[in-house]
View (cartoon, rainbow, N blue to C red):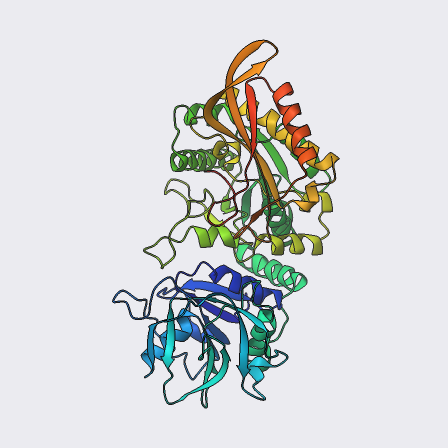
Length: 510
């Protein structure tokens, strides 16, 4: 994999957006916690320091080691990153006397400054900090201001080192992508060569070299990630890839059969395994979300171990892990970002399973996975499928899981998804699904009182799942769908619609 841009994460909620914007420029980048030992800075051609919830003045403030970076590699500090450089190289950072959060406009830009090429005075930027740079070090030069933030941007004389107190990665900074391009292309001299075609070519070559004649087993789910991963690996090793599609009993209605049928004409070596009874038995009585995830992940591994033992000389387990899975699974001890949730396909294998892991998509965001799949000619209908969580309906049934609850939610979900497709709304939504709540509510059907389950419908729009907004579905559609669910699904008498965005909510309820 080509190394181009290193992003050091100080715990900002916007760090992943920096990566997304850099990749929109067809430039490859990677995120690491600021104190990680997992990278070699000499491999990179530019470095970006993220924002942070910390103050540089706090005793527990993150302190990156900039030796080998500052003055040697093009460096951009964003918000905390800019304040850190000012604070630690002879300047002064203090609490701001004015509110520095939200929209602002550039009131001064240094003339002929390459960093702000094609950016005009008045351009809107987004601030998000409580500290501010009061005095710049002597070697720092002011290159931009807003009406309230005098030292909005600086550069270090005789270095390719820059700092900005606003966030170029967020939508509200109108020329943010231009600013990043100026830094990465015009200043750092990076080539915009990271495309889906180049990813396929490079990845297939790397897989051939790494896997050789080894056999690989992969769990297909019918989703975009595992399908693209399987196609990439198949391009590299052909029939040495053994795909297994497991029915964990938590799939959508009729999904096991329909997915197997989809793969018939893709040239993949696929075997279907119905382990639904095994999963439901193991999950019986477990209501804790993390507990359910761990059980589902463990049983997946056990099923794979059973199936892999039937194939002689398997060496690798392939997974469709993507970049958000990796980022969200970083623990507080491994970096400043807190763990949001565990992912069943992140974190390795138990000792008894003697397989190595291969994850060809673990540097890609979801939209990038789709573009890679498109470049390989994968069917558009399959690529357009909404994301579906690895634990399936197990994390959409709040509380303990039973066969009856699964049946109920499958029917609700089927009505919802089918309705989105019939009304031309499916492709306008990034992800949709239904949740079964562990509460009963009073209702009336005919002349009889009912006391049955409530379900939640959720539909969001997003690019990569790191952030998401709820979709304003038409009232007429919601009304029609609610009537179909209540009239058609035994055990449900109330339907509600989730209007929470991520953050602060997550897309899934567990």
